[in-house]
Structure formats: structure tokens, C-alpha cells
Length: 355
Image (cartoon, helix red, strand yellow):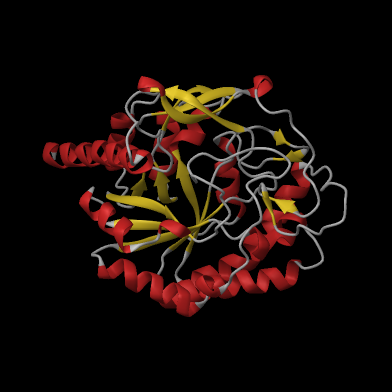
């Protein structure tokens, strides 16, 4: 197994690559979409979402991806995956809108360019509402600031306004009104069409498409259906298009928040199938409709047991901390990530020595 670090676009710097190496990472997962206002680990909710999404396509081009990989390689690291398409690039793929075919053609070109550059995994979340409803508070040990989902005690759900998808504004001048209701049948149909078109390209390019489960894992959110809000729907997604290139962006925290299934059995089921593209390794307390994200060693999930199962089943891919509580110091995000990565590296070393 390999230790990685996820970095948002504004954090893809030489200093943060060095930080990753110093913390023991060998791989980077890059988020190229820039949309957060403030700390990307603490999203805000509301009708304005996370703000206006950056539509710059240069970094998504062959040259942009090539240069990013070269910068990461220069610091002794590998680029393991890209995570999340830019909403401005595929909103009509999600909404089944008039620009769908044009946007699918662009997505296919991104996948081809990833293959040319040698980036093996594209993580994505086929969701209209995206990550919505989280609030921040002193939810982790020592009153460390983290995020939680509070159900009825959290933000009131409102319809998604026109010009927004995945909690990001792609068209600030969109007509008034809302996206409207989206049924499970409609969303699964859209996913099916997406996979039917993109997987042949991904197979030829040598890129695995890795689907993230829903977070929060609710059956509906903001009047739109969700796809993978219980672990069994991951199997439905895999069976929809059997291929090693139809894979999972396997989030331990999101899966643990779900109300069905035993998390250890879930890890065993999907790692046995060699279906995991890469892993978000984070811990939580509680399940929907109310849970908190906490330090990797204090939640409901025995993360050492999780890693034992992964090792038993031969998983040799990348694990990243995903989110982590922020620690009280001058570098809250870096300290939280360093703590999580040190814990993860210690588990990996322990399991290697046991062998």
C-alpha cells in the first residue's frame, strides 16, 4: 500500500510537495478545480454554495497535465490521480442538458490526455447536489475544528438554483428558477450513458474511472436523487459496466456514515474484487442523519482493522487522508494532515513487519 496526500489546485506548490515527502507520502492526488473561498477543508453551505467555479481549462490540457506531473515527479513523488471534474466542464452531463454531447467530448479528451501523460486514475462523483449541508465546529478531540452533518439541526434544504451543480456556481447569470426534481431512475440512466461512452475511451487510455460514494449519504438531497448512499449501490455501479476501468474512489468515512452494512465486510467485499482505484482514509462518529468527522484514531471505525483487510486482499494502491480535523497551531491544515499521515504510515510499517 502507498501513502498519498490530496492537494487542491492552489496548494499544488513545491513547498506542499516537499511537505508530502517529509510526512512520508509517495503519491499526490490533485484536485484541479478551484472554487473554495477560504480553507478547502471547511466548506460552507447555502444557496450561493462554494462560490463561482474557475473555468480555466489550461491546467486540464495535455500541456497542463504534463507540466503538473513533471513538477510532482521533480520532488520525488508520483501523480496517482485527479479528483473531481470541474462542474463547468460537465454540468449538462449531470443535468442531461443541451450541451451534454459537447461536454462529453471534452471529458473524453481529458481522459485521453491523462493517458498520454501517465495519470492512472480519474476520481469523480456523479452527483447533482454534491457535498452539501456540512457545518464546522469543535467536533474532534480537544475541540479541534472539523465538519459534521446535523440532519434536522443543520441547514434547511433548499432547491438547487439554476446555474449551480455540485454546490458550485458555473453560470452566475443563469435564469431564475431551480434545477427541479431528479428521480433515482433518471440519475442512474444518466450514469449509465456516461459510463457507456467514457469507459471505452478510458480503457484505451489506460485510465481507471473511480466513483466516490455520496457524502452525506442521503437517498435524496435538495430534491435530487443520490446514487451510492448505501454500500450495496457500489455493487450496482460495478455491475452496470463490468470493467477494471470502472472502479471506486473508496471513501471509508462516507461508507461508515451509511446506515446499512458492516464497514469491515464492505471493505472486504470491494477490495477482494480489485475494484478500488484509491482510498479516502478518514474516520467519523455517528451515521446519517447526524455524524461528525474526527481524527483518524478516534472514530467509530477501527482503521487498523480496515488496513489489515486491505492488505489481506492484496490492495496495493494509494490511500490519502482526505479530510482531517484542524489542529490548534499556526498551520492547522498541515498539522492535521501530518498527524493523519504519520498514523497511516505507522500502520503500514507495522503490517509490513508482521509479514
